[in-house]
Length: 162
Image (cartoon, rainbow, N blue to C red; front, side, top):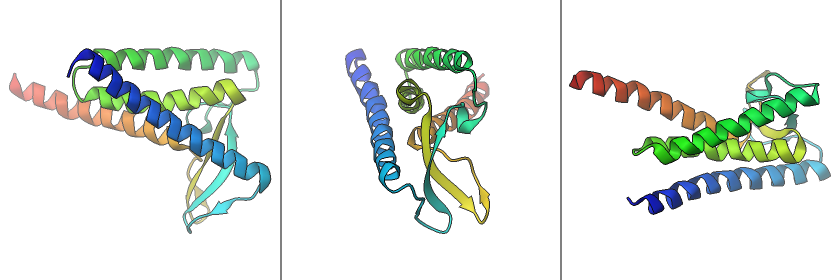
């Protein structure tokens, strides 16, 4: 695949993930602006809007705007690094980096627009609730999981060749 074609493919992956995330968040925010009630989908899945001003799954919430801005700046730098990794990777790893970049960009846009990230997917078993998350979080987690698995098995294959 030529460099230009690669750029277009990975840019589209990032864009589609980011747009899908932004559209779902827009729909959920609009719903909760008018209804303000949890959507009960199944016995283990609800949609319940919360505003996450921390990082990964609501961890490390920030009361200080300077700390929030610093973390947002660092997240922006990490996104740029992930884009660089997409460009320099010459194999399937670029797809996994694209998933991470698409999700991270979706959440980054929210951090800039709202000073918080809207999370709404609530998986639970009985009264035990997992962290509430969004579509971007799914792609970030899936991309990171695939990168870890690929690194473990790719490294193992390289070690066996030696």
